[in-house]
Amino acid sequence: MQRIKLDQDIKPLSEFRANATACIKQVTETRRPLIITQHGKSSAVLMDVQEYERLLEKIELLQDIKLAEAQLDQNQGLSHKNVKQMIMEKFKQ
Image 1 (cartoon, helix red, strand yellow):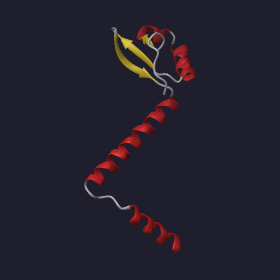
Image 2: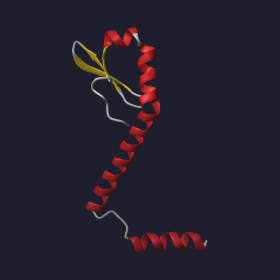
Image 3: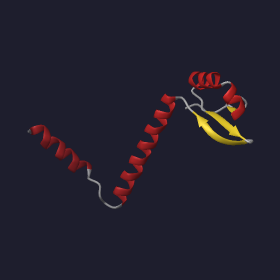
Image 4: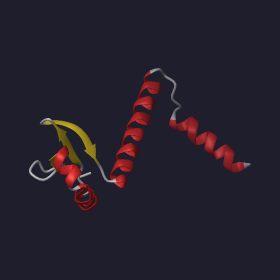
């Protein structure tokens, strides 16, 4: 996901309502999120669907890594030698 450009990617809700199609086109073409403000404060983010899915995949991967690290800290992991042996046994069958 590309970083937002402050001069292009922040729109008040009134402008978004008036130009929703153009805002969606901008997000799709630039792959940058659009920040929608209400009463001068950020209130929503409009993102391209593909960029949103990529973001979710990254979050899921980071959660998996965090879980694996916690399991290793609690000595719940397997050594490389044991895993290799388990895999080799499955291939022999």
